[in-house]
Image (cartoon, rainbow, N blue to C red; front, side, top):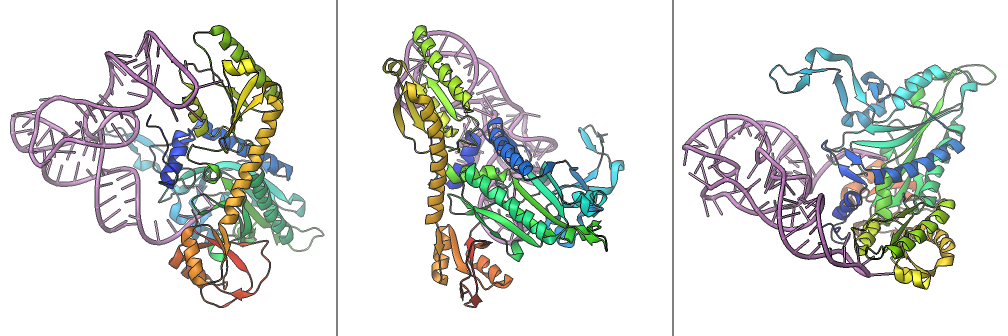
Amino acid sequence: MSDFITKRSEDINKWYNDLVIKGGLADYSDVRGCMVIKPYGYAIWEKMKDELDRKFKETGHVNAYFPLLIPKSYLSKEASHVEGFAKECAVVTHYRLKNDPDGNGVIVDPEAKLEEELIIRPTSETIIWNTYKNWIQSYRDLPLLINQWANVVRWEMRTKLFLRTAEFLWQEGHTAHATKLEAIEETEKMLGVYADFCADFMSMPVYKGVKTASERFAGAEDTYCIEALMQDGKALQAGTSHFLGQNFAKAFDVRFMPEGGGKEEFVRATSWGVSTRLMGALILTHSHDHGLVLPPKLAPTQVVIIPFLQAKNPEVSAQLLAKSEEIKTALNKLGISVQIDKDETKRPGFKFAEYELKGVPVRLVIGPRDLENNLIEVARRDNLTKELVQAETIIEHVQKLLEDVQANIYQKAMNYRTEHTKTIDTWEEFQKQIELGGFVYAHWDGTAETEEKIKELTKATIRCIPFDMEISAGKCILTGNDSQKRVLFARAH
RNA sequence: AGGGAUGUAGCGCAGCCCGGUAGCGCAUCUGGUUUGGGACCAGAGGGUCGCAGGUUCGAAUCCUGUCAUCCCUACCA
């Protein structure tokens, strides 16, 4: 077999690619920067989506859908927003093709030029605020809490499966509020939703914090983010929420009459999103040389049962299958998804490797020998250990095991992050540590110039100013100027 | 956008220097033997050699043009 995957230690980028392609999550497409998400990968995304959607609704949001195509003029209404996205927009200029008179297939019909060009949404703030203008008149229309699940396009120079593609799937929440306080609360609340999701479902710990001015979303007053640490030592922004202030309300003239009357006010806005990039985060957080490691709560198949079917002994095979079905039915009743592999053309060793590559959390193996001894072999994906379990106790055992795996990989990821998060006070050490990878807590004088200089010298950026960082006076790592707080540095994806 | 490289079967490649009508591994299909950690044997199918021109009796190979992709430098959820 040549299908083995590249060792992580050998080439982590290749390893990542191998997992995505050979693990059956996605494929390259013929369009540069665009990927095909395959059924197995999409099943994981759907599980993420279902849980996030549930959380959004639980916090009072409803779903809607806004158009893919946005009039070009909308984008220019909010100055910093245009600046942020103009360089990576796909533009629709024509609406018709025609047969090439020279017989070379079809060509763009030059007569079908659009009067106003349309851009394919890189994000939907503009078209949404242009719509909200008509929906909001009074404080009674507020808060407006809407989410949309959609695809967006950002024309990227360098792409990487799931982590950075020209088109990606995401959700974007867009809310309108009467007061600044309420909008900020919303921004914080949704960041919390993301952080909880990452911890509880993805088993991935994240740091929460505020972006510096230079890393802020184009058009926001404040950008909050969650930052996770990947196994290559680089940080990954896993989600963001923005307090947009009145920027978009002013740009699109969205005003409301406050309670008690008086003068009309511009509404306060937020937006927040996570994308299929989370798939990349999931892979880069837990997986290793045997393949993917999926947290049970997101695994499309949580348990695979492999009976050693005996071609020459159909009677034993029937018993093995009956036992497998019995276990499957019992586990299904507990809401656990189970697949029985009845394929007789592949050998067990191949199947073991295959399900490890795909990250199935628990594998049960039953052969004739086990049937005689009333045992079942249980293998867990996260630490690759195997044990023999009494058949009577298998259901409880598996249920407990899935919880263990979920908790264990979280703990592992947490330990990794703890080991790779350093507090540093000297420039020499800082440079050394950034080179080694991981997060670094260090003092910063608060200026954009220093931030830029540090990036230039070390390729490290300020990932965020953490929320839970206590005030502690110190000296900036680069300039030695006064600093009130440490910030979180890392090289980022 | 600047520098380097590569386009040959689904995938990974050889062949090109020195022109003679396309090959290897994996995958696929058929038959058989296997099955407690990626099985083996036998056979089969699959190609406008990126595209367009040119040189030549003859081009994957030489020449010209063109398109595409990948890697290294500047911007990004």
